[in-house]
Structures are given as structure tokens and as C-alpha cells.
Length: 342
Image 1 (tube, rainbow, N blue to C red):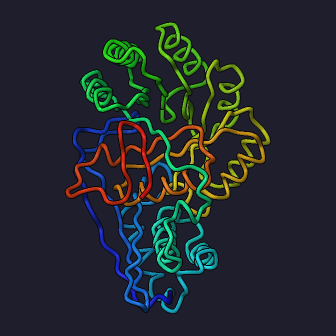
Image 2: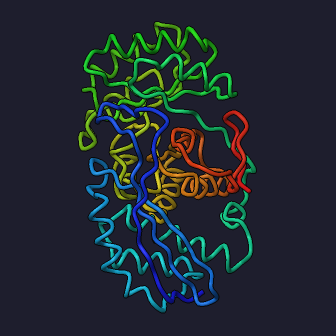
Image 3: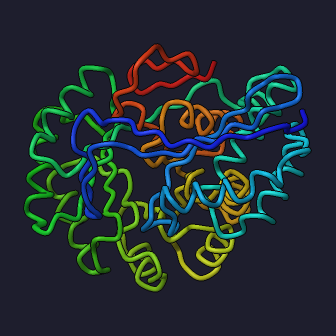
């Protein structure tokens, strides 16, 4: 599976509605796609969605990085994915999202070379997983939750961190009103301080909601505050933006009681994601698989890793449900929250 050429393009996919978090609002997902042309005629595709506040990358920086290293990939054996990963890390040591796109393409080449789907190549531990769906900071949160419940989704990830905590609680009550049996995951995207996070969780539980976890309550570099929240929280605390590299996972596992890590291939790179899985398993921490407004193609790769390894207790692979993508989904099936790779 020798690389004979490459192309880079940008893609914009509209969202069904505004995606609002404590970090801002988006109406569309902008991604970068890379294609590695292989010598047997196969086009191995990879994608990434750079998010500046997470990895420091932009659409422009990712395109520049990929165009810069592309000529150096000619002659690479994309079917030998681990050696390809090592080469990508050498060329792009600090560009997590750009590496993700190249690593995804290499995995496509590996799967093509062996004639087997990725979830089986990664171990085939599970044939299905259950995802949540994200409810952003919007006025029609209850309407979105009601629609998702009618579609069979039973877990909601509620974005919190509004400038008015009472508004967050009002959305929680509204969702409980239309889906009282729903399991709720709270995602603050760094919006709280330690005491504010603990107070909010306490008030949310007092509302009677079934809170499963609290994700990234405090600023990403404040490991001490993250540890204080995890030590006192009545629900598991999952680090997201704080875990950008396997080294971050090792540090958090060694120095804090944080309960788990959110793995995202666009944040960690695929190689980094696999390493963080190993760290979490060794340290006895929980794992969540998340996404960053990827298309269904990229979601299918995260799904393959989740099903292949069987490592994840929490799944947040919902961005394809938030995007308006034309055409049928030939990559996986979904019934309610249950996703099965094809």
C-alpha cells in the first residue's frame, strides 16, 4: 500500500441548529480532509476538525501542515500503520488534528490491505455501543431532548457553563420534564471554578436528575482544581481538555483522583488515543470516547476503536446527528442510541 500521491481539501458541513457551549457558538463544522493515493488505485481518506482552544490548531494551520509534509509521504507504506504513525509523529509532533487526518487515512489503507473492517482489526470486543446526544446551551433544549427521546436516545450530554447558572438549571428541569428517565451527563467545557462546579452538581442532583458524570468542570491547566472537584464530587469527574497527550493522562492519574479521561481522535490523534486507553486501563480510570463535530466518516473510525477495544464506559459519538449530511450512511447503523459498525 505505497503512497503515490496526496490531496488536501477543506469541507464545510452545516449543523441542524446552533451548537452553543460555554466556549462559543457554531452554525457549521469546518473540517480538513486528506487523501493518500495508493499504488493499487485505492484512495485512503482521513479527516480532522481542528478546535483552536483545544489543540491550538486552525483550519489554515492544518492545511499548511499537511501541504508541507505531503511530499515527504510519497513512498510510505500506508498499510504498515504503526510505522506510518511514527513517521507522522516525527513530521508533525505538535499537530494533533493534522496527525489525526493522516492516521485515519493510514488506517483506511491498513483495513483495505487486509480486507477487514477496522473494528475487527482493533480486536472486535463489541459489536455495538450506546451513545448519548449533546444538548447545547440553547433556548429550545427541551424540544431537542424530546425529539431525541422519541428517536430512542436515552442519554443526554447537557452543555452547561452559561453565564447564569440558573439558566443551566432551568434547561435541566425542562429536559427532565420531557424525559424524566433520561441519564444526564454534564459538560462544562472549563466554565467553573472548583467550588462552583461542586455547587452546581449538588443542585443538579437535588433536582432529581440522574447525573452520570461531570466533564471538564475547570480550566484545563488547573490540575489541582480538577483533583479537588474529583475528590469531593458525588458523580465521576471526567477530564477532557486537560488530557491532550498521553503524558497528561499519566500526570493526572499519578497526581489526582480524577475518575476518567475523555478520548477524542481529533484532540489526541489516533495514536495518542490508543496510548491514553492503555494508560487508563493500567491506572484503573474510566474512559469516555468523544467527538468534535466530525462527519459520519470520522465518527465511524472512533466507533471502530470503541467497539474494537471495548475500553469505553461512556460514548459521546453524536456529531453526525448534529450535522446536516446528504446521502445514506453506509458506515454504521444506528437505532436510537445504539451504534453498530458495518
